[in-house]
Picture 1 (cartoon, rainbow, N blue to C red):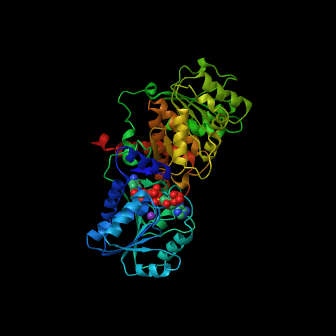
Picture 2 (tube, helix red, strand yellow):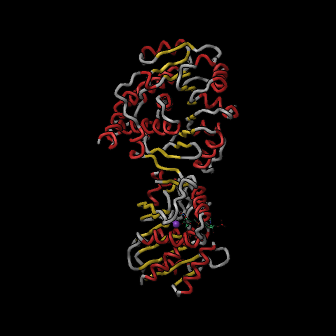
Length: 496
Ligand SMILES: NC(=O)C1=CN([C@@H]2O[C@H](COP(=O)(O)OP(=O)(O)OC[C@H]3O[C@@H](n4cnc5c(N)ncnc54)[C@H](OP(=O)(O)O)[C@@H]3O)[C@@H](O)[C@H]2O)[C@@H](O)CC1
Ligand SMILES: [K+]
């Protein structure tokens, strides 16, 4: 399943136009999608001035041609209409459909006409709405919400719901169901949006598939993720599964280093070496005796890293002057695939130029606050686009942590369907960084390692959250091997 934001959906339409479709054809195909899910005998179709309205007008014509009882309501019939809207409105007039024009003084009367129908179609605004519907639009939305006997079907998005966040503007249609076109809208991932969308049906237009060309995100679910995890091989040994180096922890933040090391070991790393302060190393022998350790030298040299397959920097590294130097040393002197997390990301924010000419796999794992430092953005910005552009510009795999964590390398983009609110506890991100580094060390390509790491982490948390109110990192780690085994056993390619 693909997911789009308002910008990505606009880009999707532009791609289709570049493929040679006309906007009138696209609207025609959109209304074919709607028609499949519309039942009943009498319809009030409420159409705004853009292409969402055009979808409604085209649908009205098809229903009329099926001899249904159809009345169309519009807000203006001037040159403010989109090209497709004007085209289909003219067709409605040509066919002598009943078209009513909303004005301030006839609003109540026209809404009264709707009470005679069984279905109201909301084709007022779709992903083109850019602020709260005002004036007559607001009044019509509120009046439609007062009608309780009719089914309300929203075209693409309930009018007044924000496409990207799933939050309502001041006035929003409460739909019984929403037929969303081409892709799931990002806002519908927000569970609160369900109050407004009702049941969501995703319908793909019968056109060339331009989802990837347009940069839509893909939902990475069990079906996609289970087969990515490889079975351990018959004659494997510790060398088969990679040697990872974790430059993590300091006197003040020992726990983060311990959790990332254990996450790395438990998700299958062949050898895990923690490069840290004496105090961290001492604690490590108690917490995770399987990990090895080396004392972190004051200046990191290229030779210190020759034997490693993957490096992690961050996870409790702190932000001292030493930490700054470590981050810069690692970026300048090592060549292995690199995972950058926590404090190291904050340090990196002042030196993103170091990401240039790296010529190796780099995975960044910020939460929203860390990402804001790396890439200042505005709260109104389209995060799907911002994340994608950042990854593309800096040639990294970006793991933007949150509900349905974003994983993108700028070319391919995913939302990971795993994880839950019970996992919102300190140290969870450190475990994730450890898992991803482990997978990189085991030879998974960077994008796959990032996706799989996020999935394993979230999936383990989901198993635990079935019984527990909170899921704490040290307990989650203990369950990682079981969860990975579950994934292998549930994968039809392995079990058959
Ligand atoms: N591939 C697909 O999926 C396809 C999707 N399609 C459909 O296209 C829909 C998107 O169409 P769209 O881009 O024309 O935007 P839409 O939502 O109709 O609104 C634009 C109008 O709203 C106006 N306006 C904006 N904010 C406002 C406000 N606060 N208050 C008042 N007015 C406001 C804005 O005015 P303007 O800002 O230009 O002055 C403009 O007139 C999409 O949702 C889907 O249904 C298919 O038809 C084709 C294939
Ligand atoms: K709508």
